Length: 332
Image (cartoon, rainbow, N blue to C red; front, side, top):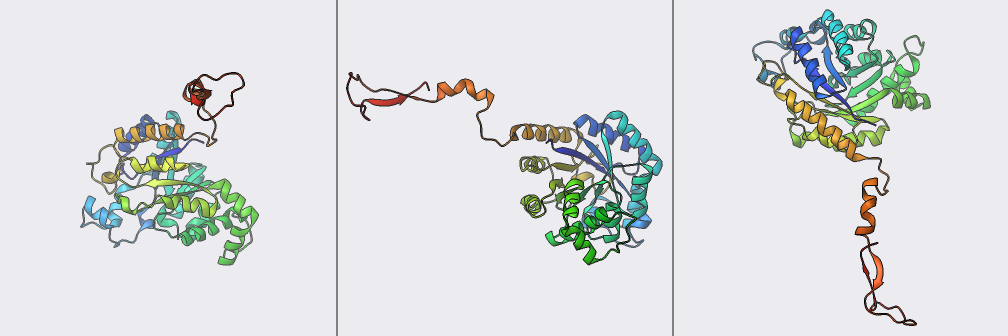
């Protein structure tokens, strides 16, 4: 199965409609499968006085609040409609992450998205997780900052929503979450509807904190499709994730790393995004089926490279074959 590559535009449009359209063009030109944005209302996302993260203070005005910054980075609903139409025209899938209930409703009911991405920061947000799971959409869950136990608890909430839907009379509770998660139907639906992404939530993420093997830990623990959301500099770790059989790789990109905004400096520029996609496609081609059998290109070399039993000296009729009068030489 081909790696699904998501070019994460995020908020690198800086709230500018034209920049957003240019980002779609870059994602298409790079050969990505999807381009992803972020959908939120600042008043539903943060309090008015909350501080920004350290990396945001380094890349934006440290005197402004996170609310002011997020308000500036909102993408209008009208622009969402225009972008999804443009993506359909260009042959690339439009994705987005909703950070609040109103935005989630907009993505599902107005834009009719069938695949949704749950951002890392919402993995402990039970009400939003439940609402996501009740949409009946396919879900991509990013797990940055989470422990394995927190991921499992999030999956229990999602399983409850998948099993019971919106109209069920079953009341959500820890007990009913785990009941749904433990049930054969819950496990079946999780395997069908959910992909987990390993992630290190720092921008850029230092290599010593990547712990890419945690992607395999989650795959083994939950039996779900797993992938990687990459916040590192460069493309090496995304390529490594492809070699570890990630089913989905997400990477932030920008038109220009020198643009103002919180995420540009930790994003790929257009040429780098193209190289990443090309490299991942090369790796997945090289991964093969896993069956240990001779490949067609090898067959013409087999007789030349292998050896046969030949005489090491003259052997007369009736002589006994020995290690001294026999040896092995090419061809096979």
